[in-house]
Image (cartoon, rainbow, N blue to C red; front, side, top):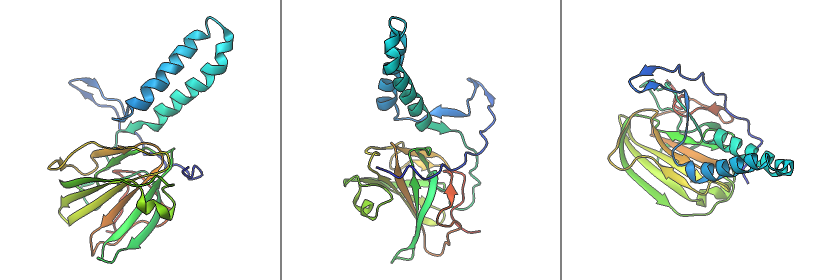
Length: 231
């Protein structure tokens, strides 16, 4: 199980809906890849809620079913964000900075733990071309545990203005599916959505040599909003 005691990073003010050719654009939407979980939960909630019209006893089932469906809607929320500044390395995940470690090759790993309360859509830290996307099988221990280094993961490499930038999505106890949104050769914009991890998990961003971290352990981050490096 992941650590539900972590508090949720505060949401930035939602982007103001703008009128486009297709109409008003909502500040929130449901994440791609949510349907295998959300649709069954919604169907059960709707069916049991309707059943209460025939018998009040169905309320005993309908109440938790509706609560679960509402929780799924909240978990799979995908807020619009316009915080990409075009400068620096932005956070790839919402959550709390779990560790900052200098690697043997001179890079600095910034690990962000995501609780089930966080938004789980991950974003590109910088503009760049996706050089590789590799899924590596592994276990599913809690993402905050040291043994999570052996967990299933998806490793990204972006060709950016500061060189190779590595992002690693790591599955946790509940997060047993990582869904990439883009593939090799894609030209990603800074802050663009690149994938989803279902339920609690972790995302590591490796700052290239010479780039100092601008965050601290315990600090909350917002994907595509919080700057990870120092000015």
